[in-house]
Length: 130
Image (cartoon, rainbow, N blue to C red; front, side, top):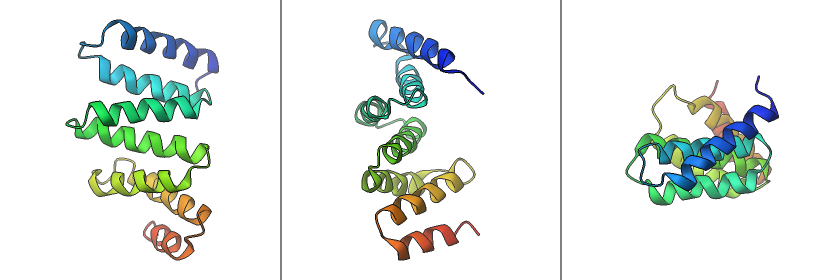
């Protein structure tokens, strides 16, 4: 279990890399780490923007893109943006390898669909977990 202080420290370190080393091989992972830290600190709007930057700038990196889709979906659920979350989760589930976070993504998709009152699709989505 991490503390808020640890996430703040991590965010500071990741922000330094993002600000000072944009050409570095560490840039994309640092941007992802910054987004994850912001989300953990409760700043889901900033996290969503950072995940979106990853998806715009690093389209060729499938693993990073999938992680960013999942992270943005989680941040969107936290903000009540269920339609956007569902779209990202559907994309994530199409391209994610089995066993990664597919069960969690499917559960979250079912939750987002139910919140959007798409009950039939939510039931079908959640039944796939059984």
